[in-house]
Picture (tube, rainbow, N blue to C red):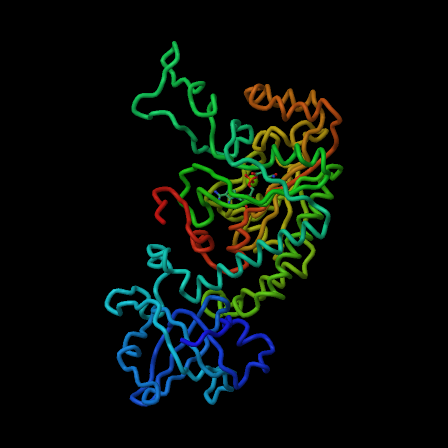
Length: 469
Ligand code: 4AD
Ligand code: MG
């Protein structure tokens, strides 16, 4: 085959490729469909760089290799040399008149599972190793990339530093959920102490260790030195919740800012979310348009709604009042002191306010130990951002910076002091008011793609009874 520089389909279709018109180019990719007749074959080729295919036209007689053409079926992978020309047909600007084709890999039509369009998302989850080759998952994973990039860009432009917090942790101070244990002990025959309990001092790290549920506590150490930091990494929760909004392994973005109070924290969360949605509207239009057409006809409206509205801000106590007066029978009844369920959150967002809502000042007893206690003694400076379709998308707070108060909360909640001595020291030495929040990356992905199940917005979902691939 003649050596030519490979062109991405994205560049051939998008960029000003006038200078390539009439020239020989090379493309490589996977065949979506092949149709035609005795005289001419049309191959729709996709290389994942963009949702669109490029059409390859083969003059069958001139090409002269029937055997090769027969093997170019849906799912096979080819390298094509040919002339880039303006397309005669409808639906595409340019196409390639093939002169040489190399078949990298065939895909037996009897066995390749992605023959026809219109597979269910449930079926595609069972073939997560191949689903990236569908239009839907190509679009989702490109959006996932763009969103990750936008997160780093936002924080970099705002003067935040990206802090890498550990994945293996020796503390469960967050109390955010059940943890996955990390151990190299022999499960059949673990070392025991005098009381017959497993002796973790003999384990790899010389203590009990787990996969982290949040990078926040270490993030605070960074903020109390660098002022503004953020983390963006995987977090793990072993809750047995088989819902469309929970994963056992999910990605979280956690900014933490010295000298921010709860209001600064809310302002940051709101402008951050608006920036991210705006970035996608400006950079992922084709993929979003595809998802709107296939899955969610109100997708663009919802994205624009985030960009254009000022988020509603009210306290938990005010929200309980609204919910009690709603005259609706919720599955979980509401009264002051209960944790809100997604039915309550979505009622507030979708039916009462019609825009995102930030709830603040939750009861102390349903929130984590590190949240700053208000003067009333019974609420804390927590904030949750609630989105339509999703419910809670962000959780955060102003942190307790007073050593005595924080120490009191730790004792009250039965947290082992040795696990968090280092966290406490930041309040002993040069403490400062500070705040932060956590954004669930896949929750945001659900919102911006219009997908209904969180397992469809991460390449290889981890959920109870599910760790294939
Ligand atoms: O509200 P959470 O538990 O807050 C924290 O972990 C704090 N340390 C954050 C902070 O202040 N730095 O989790 C934060 C967000 C939730 O609002 C939700 O979007 C997402 O993480 N989340 C999950 N996403 C997918 N699957 C799960 N099992 C999730 N649990 C929480
Ligand atoms: Mg939360």
